[in-house]
Length: 92
Image (cartoon, rainbow, N blue to C red; front, side):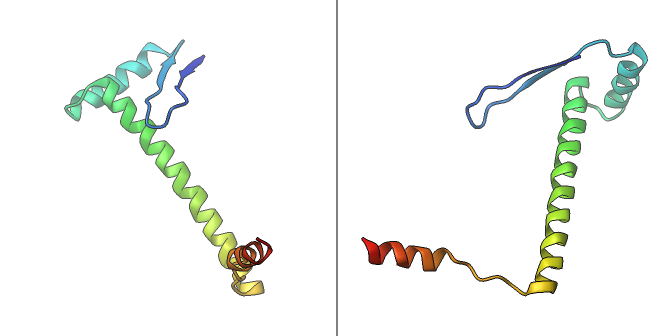
């Protein structure tokens, strides 16, 4: 079971509690943390952060590949923001 508590304000930190985790799993990570000269908490924080960064990187890579494929088929689409702003300006 995972309990997640995060404040909605930007820049806050979340707390995560993982229940019913096998003792041997904790012991393996405790040894890894000790071997790296860090606390178990910091070791787990680093693992979770790395997984999140990799997930975001993979998402960005997929999005970039889709964009490149679309641009190869249709060319670079123009940005309509400037046209819309001009239209709004003229309408008042």
